Amino acid sequence: MLLRPIGFGALFLALTSVALSFVHPWGDVRRGATPGQMLEGSAVPQDVRGIVERKCADCHSNQTHWPVYSRLAPVSWLMEHDVYAGRSAMNLSLWAGMDVEDRIALLARISAEVRSGDMPPKPYAMMHAAALSDTEKQEIAAWARAERKRIRTETSGQKEKK
Image (cartoon, rainbow, N blue to C red; front, side):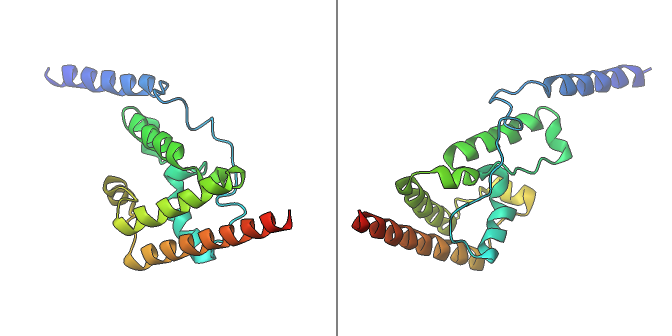
């Protein structure tokens, strides 16, 4: 007899989770994202691009990989919030359309946050095996410095031609 209330309770929770999965408190970040090549127009080495695609793209691009468990509330809400916050802070799929000053500022931020260990966030890194090794941190930071320098050189050359 005790199994019936437990069974009904489990069924109720499952149905509630499915129904709440259609609610998107931060907007439907799965549908609103226009695709775009990550870091389009930047001089990013393939090895660094691979690191960024594996460990940053889920939150900081429109190329988010949505695991099966991310489809049911409340997990869907947590993941959608993280993606919303990540894309709001920096969306690498929109790189080509960003102002030069914004790109330079983001490159400085990428370098600083990767070196300090602030990115990727510890809970995300643990759940998705996305922690950066010291070598990966150094590669990303070196690329960010080189890309800032390249952009500055390129834009100063364009200003001189005018």
